[in-house]
Image (tube, rainbow, N blue to C red; front, side, top):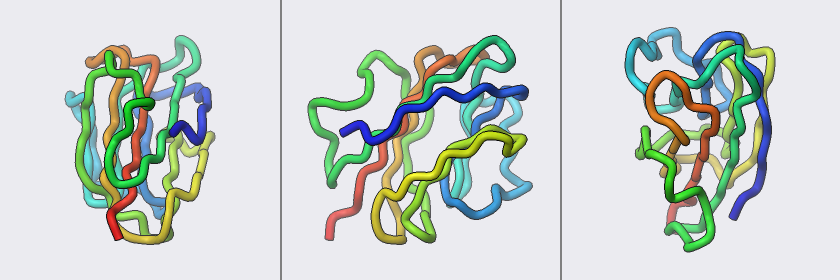
Length: 133
């Protein structure tokens, strides 16, 4: 189920998502479409040419039929540790930041997909799957 949608303008071609803690300095994107550590994902996006559309989906345990765009390309599919149960999405300069509670603290499965892999994505779908209890 989609729980949020936002438009972000970025000056640099990097969007961060993950825990509300500081993004580790060691998380470098370099030439990849995405880079991750145990708490954050850095995603390459289109910079300074319009808004980046971001949609956040939260699903219980397994993906449902209605959800992220199936035509998007998955660039990250793994787990993130969210120390307070909230996920943050924002630009690398930390000028814009969106935070949403997705559950209790702990490890969550996260899938990040973009409309156009490579240097020019203009839309990002983030799916957070709550762990089974």
